[in-house]
Length: 283
Image 1 (cartoon, rainbow, N blue to C red):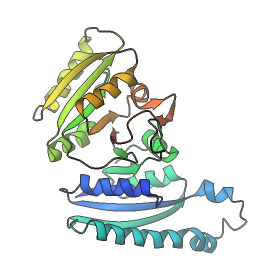
Image 2 (image 1 turned 180 degrees about the horizontal axis):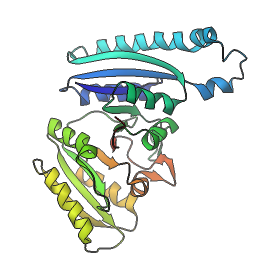
Image 3 (image 1 turned 90 degrees about the horizontal axis):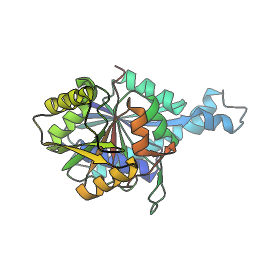
Image 4 (image 1 turned 30 degrees about the vertical axis):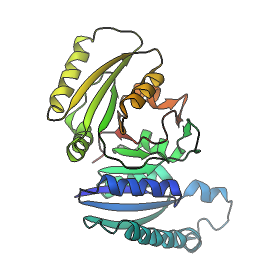
């Protein structure tokens, strides 16, 4: 039984991420935790003299959130009546967003966070909501980020950009291994360099370890030479019809170059391709 955390602000973007998660885990027994956080910084910004009053917070923030979560459960039951092996719980919290997510990840032994991004339709550059960016950077739990236009389709191909400079343990890569197993996907490992060059002995060893760990799946290795990493990935994703990206968060410099433009809050990618960010879990 997997434990999945679904943060929601009741927007259509967050509903889209929930819908994606239910289809993504369709064949897996899961407990889903729907979490709404009334963010402390927003409450404090209202300059209300009542923010320390528990009854005020309960009536103004918690009760309405619980009501909306109840409506969300009804929508799930209506639109996904076939989710027989899925169980749902609702959570409300009054806290700083990342602190709330982190504490629930530990307490509920969460296996994966699935959350949406906020962006403007029609723009190639999508602004990742600061909440999603903060979770990616600060919460050590595998996180699947679902862009606003992403619709679940069969995951034929998953791209895994990498530089081979770090050794990745089995525990860190397990979420990707599980996805390949459940969805019968092929894995496209993409190594991008400024100019063509031989791998160092250490890089070759790390590549061999990956090849061995994912040996039961269809796996291909690509070496791309391009001074602009973002352009190289963009071209690869479009030419291969990639359905998901996988990243390792601890390789943060490479990770930022690929996904983000100048600031970590801006993702330069497609508005349709989810990306999995893998961390060593906190528990």
